[in-house]
Length: 563
Ligand SMILES: [Zn+2]
Image (tube, rainbow, N blue to C red; front, side, top):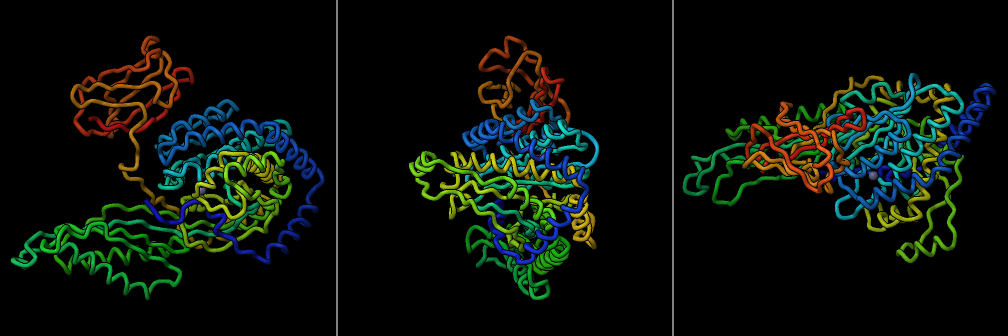
């Protein structure tokens, strides 16, 4: 979909802030003033959490390796989802499968009561490049950090709840806003995240809020030379709208970014175009400015339709919010990164990476937290309107490695990435314990959040994902001829067993078939069942998998079109 500099915004926010030093120093002094008991629990719990992450480095590497091998792109992260889900479930987390109606989105919860600590990690790979954004490392570190925090909470009787959010399709679609709109973040007090990259740094930067809109015009075709008076040009409407918007720019705030492409401009010069369309990205540092510009741009489109006698249709509309920074949290993240020594590499490991074409060694320096306005947009923005958040960076790649590159992908699947992810799991764990055990730290973060949100309108989810974005659910084909559903066991993301149920429903939610696997079918590489009422060609169906062995836990598995 987009060119909105998705992902890796941590590395794009490298503007040193001199203020940080002073504030860091003063927060250290404030820390020393907290009661000795709180500090003692905090430091021994942090040590336990870090030790757990270290002792379970094998799990971090296993998840990172598996996800790297799967290299599944946005909304197709089935195997990656199962891998992370099973580790979390095995560790005692309660899993909400297919959260917000997205098949590969999960929210895992452990504990009870306040405070609620969130951990948010991307999981998808890039088309063609694999894990060139290192999301395999993000998820691995986040999952093990959550387990480490849980273990320390149990050991030291620390109250609270951990919620893990695994975010699919970060690179291409806006899933996180749908999860935010569905209310999953409403009870989260603070949210931590890790992103792979070339630096050891935390951030308090902002991203741009953005509306993504398709404006379609419907006119009337005619011979452009022989009978132009009989035509109504949809392309004229697109052009008039663009001109109006270009005049409008002068009267919008300076920091806005508005860009468009014409996606349909007609077929041939001698035909008056009956249809034409453009797609706009409308961006501003804060969502209310986008909302204002959006209304004015919609008016430009309406005016263009009126001027040309054409009809305006909004074909597609999605929106994401700006990222709300939190400096108090970024400073805590910096302390957490510092409390965990950077990864060390042996000569043998360095030679091994050289053999893979990687000549540098991941940076050991820890940078000051950075905060600036990025002109890109990121779906985490919506989440940051709900709860204070920061993303910490731990070096997983050699200096100079470009995000989304083959070199980044190579390192994300090798010792540099794996060791970086292990260090990140420790830093996240230390930071999580700090926020759960030190009420002053959490209060500072929350009061900064309240201050930054003053005057902002209530959050309303604007994002949507069009139907075309979803892949066919793996392993399924449905025949429109005889209503047969054929399932290839090797291609499904679930493990077939007797008693499991596959439910096929219409898009309206009506159940069309419910098939219970027999022991015989479950043992076959392929099995089939019939939709009694049949289905139409091209009809879109929903598939739900109900796992008999797991307390009949239901997984909305995805969509398939009858053929
Ligand atoms: Zn990324």
